[in-house]
Length: 193
Ligand code: AMP
Ligand code: MG
Image (tube, rainbow, N blue to C red; front, side):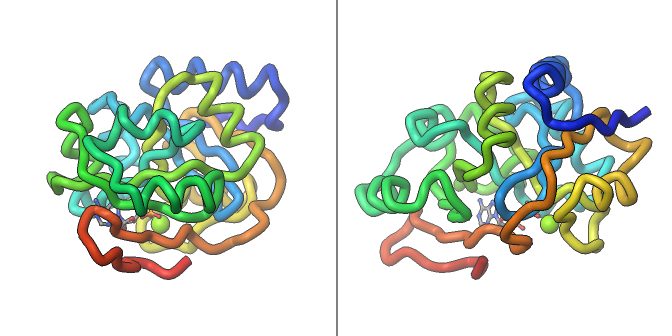
């Protein structure tokens, strides 16, 4: 059973509990709707791949409530990355950094690097703060389908496969984040956003 609820403070608190219990919650970001799970819980992470039908060779982006939590996920943060975070976070820029060993292989698909960003959306930030956890969150669609920009779009694609959808209105940008690899110098754009 999938619940579709407006993103009120009460429902965001409920969604945070679902995340803490290992569940899957779709939520709005400024780019597209994400399908979030506790990035440190292997069972929750495998639920993402099952719900989406996504191959585990495709790594996930870890979403944080603020840049200060980056050391939980990334082993080191180069000076360039610090400056980019200050300039572009919260916002649609994903940075590839050396991973912390505690980050599960399902997040990185076994790579030595991890993708991290702070989304610029009040509902996404409120959920991240209430859960108190990093959220691995790919786009909230079945693998190969278009990334969703509304809660109804998520419902259409994933109802019956995830626990909860928070409806926070349409995602404004509608295009995925830019992915920039800053784990090596010079930095490289892996995905234009
Ligand atoms: P999605 O979550 O569907 O927006 O896709 C996330 C994308 O981020 C992946 O398909 C990769 O292109 C990229 N990505 C995530 N983690 C890494 C990583 N460690 N190294 C390089 N690219 C990554
Ligand atoms: Mg996607």
